[in-house]
Amino acid sequence: MLEMDVAARFGDFKLEAKLSCATTGIVALFGRSGAGKTSLVNMLAGLARPERGRIAVNGEVLFDSERGVDLPPEARRLGYVFQEGRLFPHMTVRKNLNYGYKRAGRAPRIDFGRVVALLGLESYLDRRPGGLSGGEKQRVALGRALLANPRLLLLDEPLAGLDQARKEEVLPFIELLRDSLGIPMVYVSHSMTEIVRLADTLVLMSNGRVEAAGALEDLTSRLDLRPLTGRYEAGAVIRAAVVRHDDAFELSHLRFAGGILRVPRVEAPVGAEIRLRIRARDVALAREEPRASSILNIVPCRVEAMSAEAGPQVDLRLDAGGAALWARITRHSVTKLELAPGTPVFALIKAVAIDRTSLGRDAGSGRFLATGQ
Amino acid sequence: MSELLPISPLEAEALRLSLRVAVWSVTLSLPLGLFTAWILARTRFPGHGLLNGVVHLPLVLPPVVVGYMLLVLLGRQGPLGRALFEWFGVTLPFTWHGAALAAGVMAFPLMVRAMRLSLEAVDRRLEAAARTLGAGPAAVFLTVTLPLMAPGILAGVILAFARALGEFGATITFAANIPGETRTLPLALYSMIQTPGGEGPAMRLAVISVLISLGALAVSEALARRLRARLLA
Image (cartoon, rainbow over the protein chains, first blue to last red):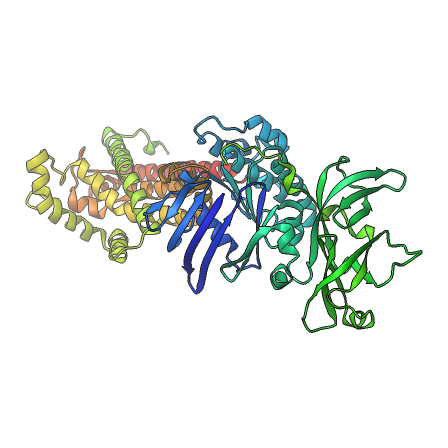
């Protein structure tokens, strides 16, 4: 459990954030740059001091201005992976990794060799950070923070400084750590794509305030949060189970509340629960069920709400048997199809629009270690 | 060339004394210099500017004035000098300890400047990262800050050593020019120039001074290169 209720002022910027969420899996902290994400994480880590408030992790109070509690960073046992890596330039990779490991005190639940193997760092151990690529540096930074045996790992835009290829070099490792070590993480990002892929819980920040916090699926389907989650990124996140793989066409059949979805083959076993994101602009609408269409996925649903923003586009929230879907169509089509809340429609989802990067692991898979949480 | 060798016992004594004075002055002012550099670089308090000025004073004052101030302060009749003598039996003026002190005071601003600059160049975000990894402030200083400012410390030490070796004005004022006690290389050289027929020894002392300075410079260059290689490799 992560509880924060803090107020701080940095120059002209005022931060007043209140937050309470479970620390299982990955908690994503999302917001535009300048929203106060990094400040909030720094206060959590003890690198910045709130003017007043209270911070507690799993019941242990790290900061409480009323009771005069302010644990120094080294006593908080929170791992921190910085945007710029911050590896020690005068130490080898091995010494960097050992820095927190040898200070971790009691028997760490993480083994040095295992972390090195998980992150694929064997061949760099005796090199210095100066000669590593950006992606390699971030993997070392991840390992270094992990080996300090933290109860919570804080990642502040760890991929922001990397190009797409380098991101793909690091992202799978973060997924691996989440799934195999069960370290709860707070992941700061302004990329919805990364968050959907990684996070279970979403915290939306804007102008130094926490605007909403909750399950990723719930927050991404809320119309009122659209200005925060971003128009381009608009879309729904749904949970689905793998029903079967169609080897002939290299498709996978997924069952979700609204029926069956056929998508390009996913690397998950039959029965696995996964999460996928369907962008609003990849969903078209029809009043009648189309025949002889190339669209694989035709989901009957009902219009639930419509965005009232001006402009040529309208976003509609659809109810597909209890799951929320989003469709972005032109205002012209809304008029032509006479769409209004309550109208039954068919959502047409192109299978190819659902790609690898829009898939995430399901939150409820329970593969986290419960120790110390 | 033959008149450069051999070195007379008097000159050898001046050389030994100079090295002793310089080594002691640098060794003793190293921790104090580091501390002062840290105060100046990392803290802000009323009087910060005054401290900065006092530390830099020997750099801008005529050395004779510094020597005279030391004499006034630490002489037998001076407020500090009397206490030192009465409580510890220590006399500084006209002793090689005094020469080391004068050299140390004159070299101090150079040492502090180099260290302060290197400390200010240390990325404080690395120190913050070390804290999140479980290291307390003292451990962070020893394992992150100090190694990262090592090139600056080295530069400060070499500068101070060279300055101490060449110290003349404050030394002759505070510790006088006593053969075997406070007659360091520059003072011996000065004395030889004043003595009829001292051209040969004077030349030898000058050559020795040049050799020591070049040697110190070479050692510092080699060390600096190794430190840089460690940081960049």
